[in-house]
Amino acid sequence: MKKFIFAIAITLLTVTASFAQERERPKGHKPSFSHEEFKAKQRAFITEKAELTPQEAEAFFPLFFELQKKKFEIEHSIRKEMRKPRGEKFTEEECREFVYKMADTKIEISKLEREYIDKYLTVISASKLHKIQHAEGAFQRHLMKEMTKLREERKNRD
Image (cartoon, rainbow, N blue to C red; front, side, top):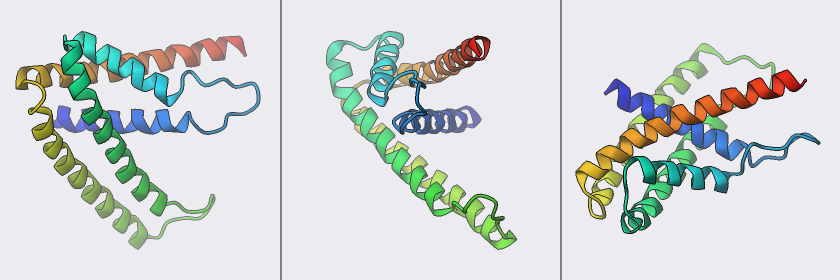
């Protein structure tokens, strides 16, 4: 269960990071890759690691990306709601509210993921879904390594 929650958290961070890349960058700063490129890399990586056929990939990924978008929207809405202007502090009551809202958000996302598992199983087998879940975790680790490597390269250039 802890691994599952960790995978969800990493996925949310990755999706958030990929959407953040879409924002305007400072002059001269080129993003690593766009959101569409991120999705293409994710799809290719998962397809290869989970050994999906082209037909399985065609059936699975529209659902997968639909779920990712819904999860991002849920998480984004709670974070947007709980923002304060820079320098302002949260009261104890606001922190308590935020903690409970985050827990409710995780429950909402878990319910959504459960719903999508049922959808996935109409287009791929449970064994393929299991492979996809492992591949998704491997992709997150791969992405973190890639991001670390890029940071180091930028640091060494500056």
